[in-house]
Length: 167
Image 1 (cartoon, rainbow, N blue to C red):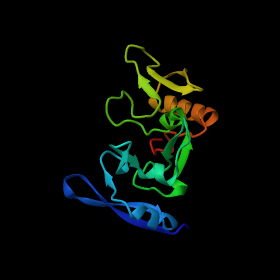
Image 2 (tube, rainbow, N blue to C red):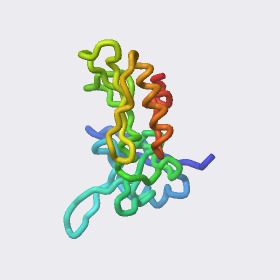
Image 3 (cartoon, rainbow, N blue to C red):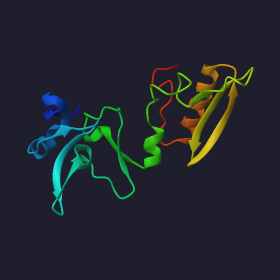
C-alpha cells in the first residue's frame, strides 16, 4: 500500500476538509493554500498577471494536450497518483456515474419510452464517438445488462451498472 498523507483544504463558508495525497508529494503540495470551489481541489495562481485557478490533480499528474485527468474511484478529494488516469474527454464522459435526477431509468445507459408497448426500455451508448442503439427490451434489467455487455466490449474504461451496484 502506498504511504498517504492528508492536506487540509478550505471549503465554503469557512469549513475545512481534507484531501488525500501520496506521501512523497506531500511537501510539494502542502506549501500551497488549497480550496474546493466546485468538486475539485484547487489553488489560485497568476498567469500573465491575471488571477486564475489550477487543480491539484493537474499538479500531481499534468495532462498532455487533448487529455483530461480522470479520478478512477470518482472521489475528487483523492489525489493520489494511483487514482489519477489520463484519458480523452470522450473516455472521461463515458466513465461518468449515472445522473441522479432528470433520467427516466434507474440504470446507466437505459431510457424508457412509455409509448412503446411490450418493449419500452431502450439500451444505448456511444461507441467510438457514435451513438449506438443497443435495442429495445421488456424490462429495465434486460436493457441494463445489454448496456453493460456493450461497454465491456467496446470501451477502454467501462463503468457498468454492476460496477455501480445497480444490478
